[in-house]
Every structure is written in C-alpha cells, then in structure tokens.
Image (cartoon, rainbow, N blue to C red; front, side, top):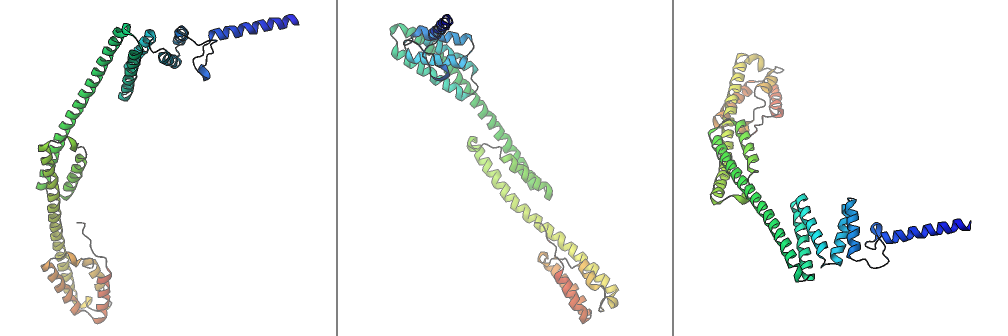
Length: 319
C-alpha cells in the first residue's frame, strides 16, 4: 500500500511539473498559462507557434497582441504583427473594417518606432511604405467608385429631367382624364429618383421650370376637365328634361291626377339632377319644365312630387 501511494505521488508530481513547464502565465481565464517566472519573448514565441500550428487564430492573435505590447521593440513580434495586418487587409469585408486595420497598423508603427533603436529604421521604413501604398490604393479606389457613382447619378438625373419634360408636354396636349392622371402619377414616381444635391445650375433651373409647369398644367387641366364635365352634365340634363316634358305632354291628363305615377317618373327622369352644376340656360330650362308640370298637376299630387324631388339623392361629379 505504501509503495502504491509513493508511485501515485511521483506520478502526480511529474504531471504537475510537466504542466507547469508546458504552460505560461500570459492570460487569465481559459487562456491562463502559469509560469514559475515572468515569461520572456522565447516563451511567448513558443506559445504563439503552438497555437498557430493548431489553427487557433483567435488565441494566437491574443498572444501576439500581448507580446507586441510587452516587448514593443522586438523586431520579430513587430514583423509578425504587421504581416498579420496586411493579411487581414486582403480578407476585410467592409470599408470600416479596412480603416480599423489601417489604424491598428499605424499604432504598431508608432509604438515600435518609439521603442526601437536606429537598427530598426529599415524595418519601420519598409512597413511604412507598404502601409502608405495600401492606403493610397484603397482611398484611390474608393474615390474612383464615388466618382463613378456620382457620374451615374448625374446621368440618371439628366434622364429623369428629360422624361419629366416629355411627360409635361404630353399632359399639355392631352384631354384624356385617365391618361393625364397616370402621367401625373408617373411623374411623381420619377421625381423621387432625382438626387437634388447633384443638380448643376442649369439642371436646377430646368427642374424648377418643369415642377412649376406641372403645377400650372394641373390647375389648367382640372379647370378644363371640370368645365368639360359640367358641359356634358348640362347637355345630359337638358336631354332628361326634354324627355320628361315630352312624356308628360303625351299623358298630361293621366299624369296630372292624384295617385298617378308622376312622382316615380320624376324621380327616375330628373329627381337626381343636381342644380348646383347647372349653367344659366340649363337652370332656366329646368325651372320652365318643372314649373310647367307643377302648375298642371292636382294639389294633392304636388306634395308628393315635392317630397320625391327633395328626398332623391343628387348626382355628384368627381372633379
């Protein structure tokens, strides 16, 4: 039994010894590695290579970050960190990410340059040139992209202005109410595609002209359509009044008596006529026809006729 305990104690001691030698005091938490003494660059480099061989990218980055901070004048750590920067630039997914990487590289160069000696000037110069070149390429490409986008939007602005001017001319020449409405809706949709900030002075003037033109033509067309619709309504009203007068004249004796179908005929023929849409001549004709019929019917029938004419819903024009 004693022998067994001695063997277990030896094994545990050996495992603890190997664990202490293997691990290093670099991080807390799951990445904590305990050293018996403060680790030097060699321990950090060993641990870094182990993690890289295992493809543990996140952990290796942490080790390298701590190493460059603890040994800011170490050329090997600086070189590895800068190489990682340029590798990250190739894999960056967004412009913001690229700019963050640039800032990281600038900090590395600044810290290493401040901590190192004259022997490191060549290395600093080398990486500085590479960083400047990468930045110039990046900002040049972004500038060209912005110029291309601006050019395309300028071209689109010009296309939209021409379309709006064409639509305006088409509306001026049209009397088709539905076509005019469709054109106005199309113009409103197109206008949302304009980038007003990019319009030059000439385009701004054209845009003001076409927009004011739409306002003016809209008012003119509404007035014209209203007048046309009123005119059509008046013509139809006169036709309805004429048919009523003819029917009453042919059946005057029957229709003028109490209990006749005259109230229903009036309701059907002219009850819905809206006199607010009448012009002068139509109003006169309405008063003549209605007054003539009203004067010839029995007194009892007049009440029913008046009630029907008053209660019947009137026409509404959608102007």
